Length: 210
Length: 210
DNA sequence: TAGATTGTTAATCGATTAACAATC
DNA sequence: TAGATTGTTAATCGATTAACAATC
Image (tube, rainbow over all chains, first blue to last red; front, side):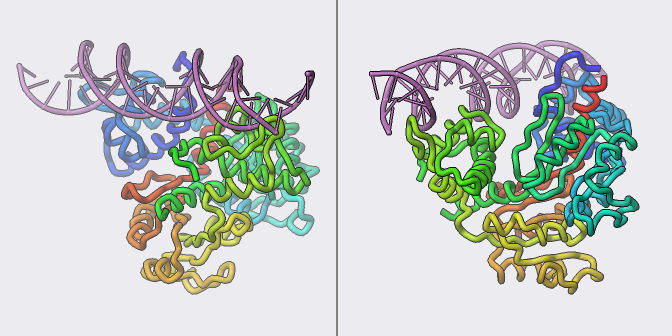
């Protein structure tokens, strides 16, 4: 177990290493190098070595890394060995897609609850789960022991949903709403803003053509 | 027009400023400060001032920024004043959601084409567009003059789709597939990995409980 | 032994924070 | 004039890159 604090940039790259290691495993590679890992995860060999050595010394000089062992260790550092329960708020097109996303189960995440404010949607069954009304959110989180909430609502209700999730006791929130959220310091927020990503592409596109 | 190169971290924050300024405009604010903008966009006043001053001097000391004017200028820097045409490859649940996402049109992005490899999906009409087979991708991009491609396919086909988009001539790619993509240096790639975001939340969740 | 590759240190680079003079 | 707030500089901090000794 690492004693030093792991830098946030390193943590952000760990999931890519797990993915790359799984791909290598599927390809039948028993051993790999920082060079091959960098190639597969989109970073440089130097960064790979620095990141991995900040977690512990799991490679062998002159040889490389044991793929299966390293995958297990990095997944353990990320906390992917435990199942995590996730509640999705907002069951529009995006919420639907998230509720059914196969990439979650592979990584130990289970969607255990769906919530929507629209009475026409409440009660419908999506991905085997009956959609609950917002007033049942706290009870749902408590009953399922969910620790992560996903916000897939319009931006206008995002802060309200966020407050409800925090009050219900989740420790982490992933939001797709294009709006900054206020949360107490002990709650962790990650934001995905698809339109913002396109805007950044547009910036470079504009530069390229200028 | 700014002469100096704009730092990537600044570019990444610009869309949030545009959003915050639009919210302020909707609230009827004519003028704002770096403090209020920071609050709304999730950064500090110092960062706001530094970012904005790297684009030009658009504030007035002792007074603040003109909301409408600043919004227009930042949007112009991002290149949001021109309509951008977007092609979505992979029309599963996520592709469906993207094709219909209202947040795109608001920011000047129009989905002009849909492509899927599944013969059962090809020909179906989603969001007013007939889904095309992969072999029509190049023609589709050429005909619509699309400059941005979105990859919403399984990870296994992501690189192949990426190569086809590059060959078809798009300048920017937004991928949702959890896999590093190889592209020529003149093509810009942004990656959104939802499972990775959850994994990062899981890391902090684990620390919190440890 | 010779070649390969890690783990780590030092050097470079860039981003954030703090502070304040300029100026409305 | 006094108070407010920008634009900018300097100081701090953290991340990346380069290089190489350790070692398999």
